[in-house]
Amino acid sequence: MRIATLLVVLWLVIGFVAATQRGYFSGSDTNCAEVGSVVLTVVAGPLNYLGANPRIECDLPQPST
Image 1 (cartoon, rainbow, N blue to C red):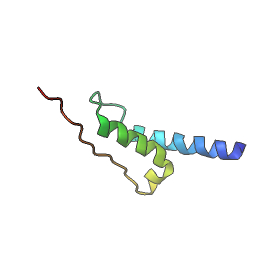
Image 2: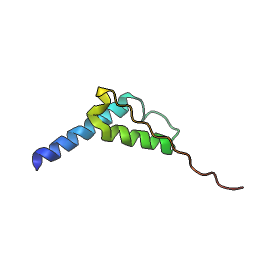
Image 3: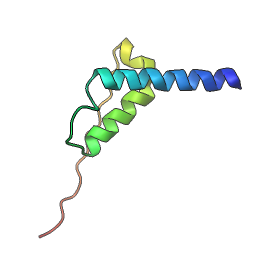
Image 4: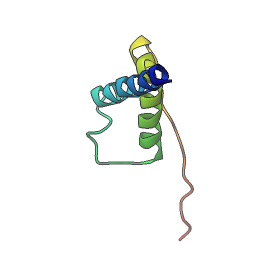
């Protein structure tokens, strides 16, 4: 069980490093696509270094005026 936990934590740390290298944490404009891409990049972990580039596109409904 300890090895599995260590592997999951290491996987997520590698994903966080990949998201940092892509500059996802440097922008001030935050929307659902940006947040989704960051989360997916962190979850993808080492797959980012094997060519995965997860992106999310989302359209939120605009409020009526």
